[in-house]
Length: 138
Length: 138
Length: 138
Image (cartoon, rainbow over all chains, first blue to last red; front, side, top):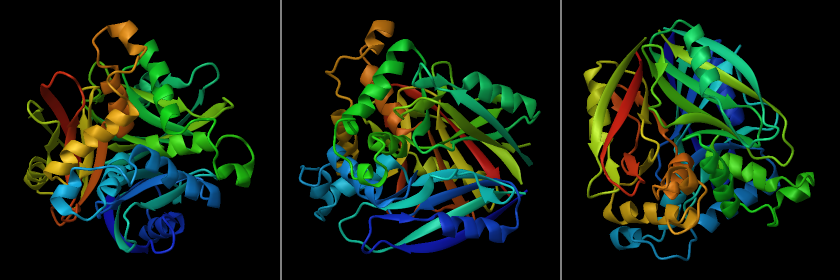
């Protein structure tokens, strides 16, 4: 058993939901571990990680659904502290989660065919995002 | 330290929220590990995993709450891609999460008395669902 | 590689969102492990764990957002089973998650500057809450 850390960045400019699956699979393969778990963690407080079937419809529908829960136009107390207009972004990110754990077996993520790992950009400014992969296995 | 993979299937026909606790506890016990973590991962993209107090009321209330966030009757872009009427199912599943990590100590899940591990069926067709347990410990 | 369990309690009286970061970091440091993952798990069924920028605004906004998803005043089936008025608390807790996994590298949680680990009290009675930290690393 060992633990290996990988880091990479995602450019969210132009799209809000970014497929991380190829990069996560590549990082897992590089470790030469056969079996274990990979924790995908987003360090920024207005980004999140989950899984979804990565097709153009759901990529629009998912942020739309979150907008229903925490609309941009609502009044948030966060605005008093920061005055940066992204209170809704923080709330959505805390709801979805900064962290996802995916098993891998025989070097392959156990995702199934229709489930991809995605980074979800929730801020009003798009930017470069840091991700940490912590891979524990043998 | 070692890692052991267990797989099992859940029949969601007839109920939407299925108690996985006895099966997960059984799998952890079979490994003969004393301490570690178990990652419960659902491979299908319209199922999710979380914890809840497993009683008949909440088993109805939880899907009802998700229906408020992503109603069946709403219009989803996913419909254009797949035309299968389950856009809301994908969105709910991505919100709840495909993955849950639970510690075990002295061979026992640290769930407390009122918290059970559940599979949540969110699709419109019920069916057999594949779950992967990745157990890491010693 | 080894696994070390730490437990502590949180008093949620007086605030609904409690910053766990210093305590989690202290527990990780005490293990003398350099790299790994810590699973933070809440045993009570009406509490949850996530991350947020810990400032007074978001600490109010986050419970307010959850109130939109599962309002206190709604009718829940849970009431028939328990008659304790906290159906909304269970639902919010199951949505947010009882469990969070955070990597640590060179003995330090990879949280970034603006992201803290928080316990979220969702019950109508505040009280002492048990948390389990399962630390896996080397």
